[in-house]
Image (cartoon, rainbow, N blue to C red):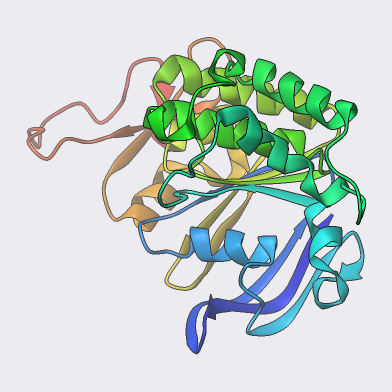
Length: 272
């Protein structure tokens, strides 16, 4: 689906990431993680086309991104930004309907089918009741779910999410990730930047950790989600336990006031 070879990512003349070699196949959910400032947003902006690669190559479905017209790219990739700036002065349904823009004919407008798809996306994200509400009256979490609905309405084979659930409470966050899991089962490719290590381990197939301008770790969850790797990457002691129901590794951070003679093992888990 997406391939980067020796890519250099950054803003203008400022390099943020270099030597990025990455292939994301269709139907995979990839979590982008790493310390603040490690380049997660920059990589997503490069993947979305907002930032052109400063070097190397990038392909989407075998086509060089430089050859794609904006409308063609918008039919392949839909993005949910980390922040959108000032909320637009429009109702929520109109914002979601904008996701159908890549499919509008040159002389046409939105069709009944476009409106049906937009309403379905709002229902999927639990925002149908917000359709007539001004975007400017929404809470941060409501606004974020409306943006996710807009991306879903775009009906692309790939979704790029930049901390898309960071403003949601835990119940809404789980709802969104369950929805994304359903879309992944339908063959959609998902690349999501996320700070929540444990949520990433629960819902992603593969994790990519960035640090110091490069890919530091890349692999299946059980291969890279280890105590030594995460402790070194985040520069703080981290223990790993197994989720009590699904067995997925979960991270436990060590508070700074834990006494030095505290047990080194965590009941029911491992500390490898």
